[in-house]
Length: 221
Image (cartoon, rainbow, N blue to C red; front, side):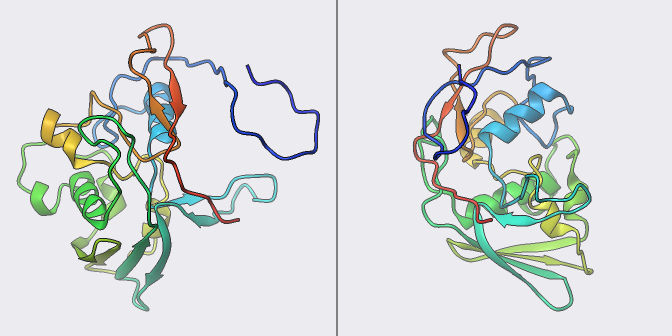
């Protein structure tokens, strides 16, 4: 267990954090799962979104400060209809099959956002409605001019999208999981700081997450 800090000094890597969970996660797919602490804690632990938000004592309760995550920088068109994200190099998914630790690319963002909004290749699918499709209201197209650039175009100005891109319930997912299982319900593989150790976990008793050794995202304050 992690010992209380005596103050001062630099943070050190290592140790174990034990935390109580009120319920087991029962669905690892944020586009369809019910909101529960088990589900949402799992998403936030194992996944990463394009952006994130700053937390801490210097951030007011009613203030949202966006930080880069998978996307290291972004631009918005003057009419707020086009959002361009430039992805950070070297961000990798967990080294678990069927994804096997490959790098996150613009194609992953496109696939994820079309899946989460039930647009593009998923428009006429028989998937259940997405729970957070409102994150993508009036989305018209997603373009990937190169492997590290994603361009989202909306039919009307959509100012909330930057905040939506930072939601823990709107992470970037690996399509290999869907291609293999038909959903993300049973398998939790993301690009976040921890991966789920299935062999060490036991439903109703413990869920074990371990450090993602290839995690390379460092938030800028």
